[in-house]
Length: 110
Image 1 (cartoon, rainbow, N blue to C red):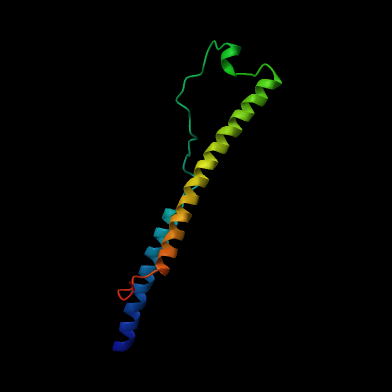
Image 2: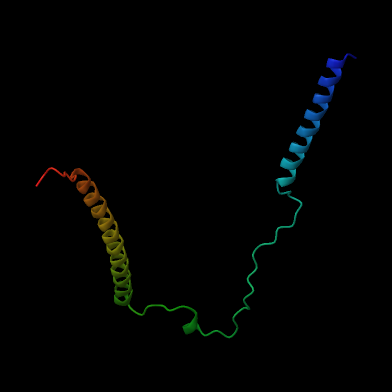
């Protein structure tokens, strides 16, 4: 072998080893199906001797259901109005900055 062939042979060996290490690291990062994956188990104890009235609050009439829905709608609307007010004030502040940008100070103007 000539000296140039030995150099290319050495570089080839280094490249092969580098690729092998790269492939090994990529394959080791993938989760293997043989690992036992445990589902999230709740640590709460089961409720015993629970009364039906404690389990679920069932509305007694359709009017109470309607009232609850209307209360939730009012709460949602007030939150949306507050968010809209905040966004509007930010837009107005940016608009005032832009309008102030057009007015410049002229020392010669009295």
